[in-house]
Amino acid sequence: MEILLINGPNLNLLGNRENSIYGNDTLEDIEKNLSEICKENGVSFASFQSNAEHEIVEKIHASKEDNVSKILINPGAFTHTSISIRDALIGVGIPFYEIHISNIFAREEFRHKSYFSDIAEGVVCGMGTKGYEFALEKAINSN
Image (cartoon, rainbow, N blue to C red; front, side, top):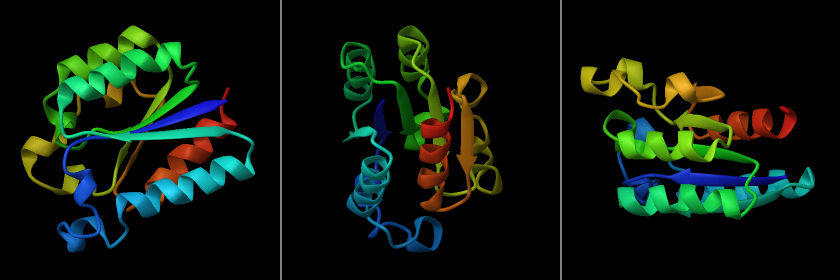
């Protein structure tokens, strides 16, 4: 099994960005933790972060050729704006799990709409960086 983690815009700033909302873990901390969990479970793991929508779309397209089994994605602000990322996920047909560190429904109203939740295998929201672990465990243990 090959799992791909995709993180969208500004998530490279984790650990330094609005700690009261996003906590103190860096993206590197999250990736290292997930990599260790995958290793313990005999699962291959790759991660990707970009602030550019087209790069995320291209990574999703390439995931089919890379034999990715499941995608974990925190689209960041693209959650509320990106039909092109949605279409890419539909296009490759790889099951994916949507992750949000904060509870997007307890924040500004414009954050309440996700272009991904209705097509995701599951959504983890508001559980802090532990949400990445929850999504990974589900991805590993689901068929």
